[in-house]
Amino acid sequence: MATPEIHHIPVLGDHYIWLVREPDSGDRAVVDPAVAGPVQSKLKELGWRRT
Image (cartoon, rainbow, N blue to C red; front, side, top):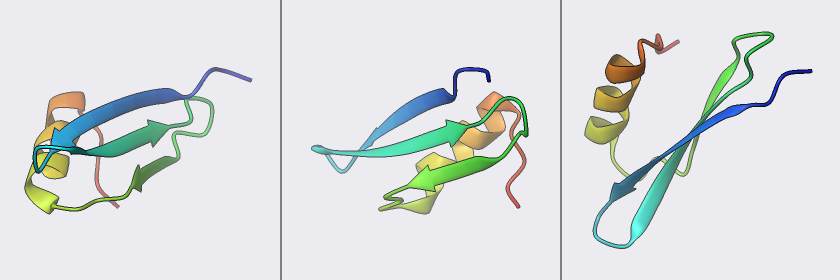
């Protein structure tokens, strides 16, 4: 089993949104998405599709 890929996005001054990807299956999750814009930008930067 491969190690999950984890990225954090700082938002709102004192908050983080977490992006997690399981490399074997490609499953992705967004944890605590306080705002959408930074998440969409990071997904585009990483080349991850939003489903």
